[in-house]
Image 1 (tube, rainbow, N blue to C red):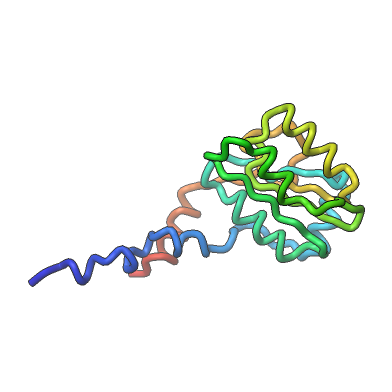
Image 2 (image 1 turned 90 degrees about the horizontal axis):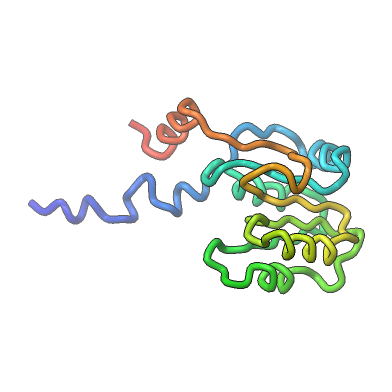
Length: 159
């Protein structure tokens, strides 16, 4: 009897399409509470944490929960020109009504980051994901632990 039929990649409980649809854990604020917290920190904040800690997941959830118009700018890790990629995704012009969310802002480098801030300075809010703190005040520090890992594994692959 062949086991190939029972080992299809689509049946893998840890396949990317399943893992990527898990909601962010540990965030119980409403959209209005989030906006107040961002505004209290000056309107420009960071979601900080190591790779795989949920920064992008949280940013995507924020894009659905924050007041419109909200623009989600994505930079891929392999992008040879991250600044140009980011600028192409911005509205022209960026107005005081916009909330700009940028994933992988650390890819911009120091000069690209300064130019990005200049291009988005009129935005009402700016939220960036970063691996290290420092460029903006931290809205949240994402992290993982063994308890969370166990909960996620139980959810993906129930016994």
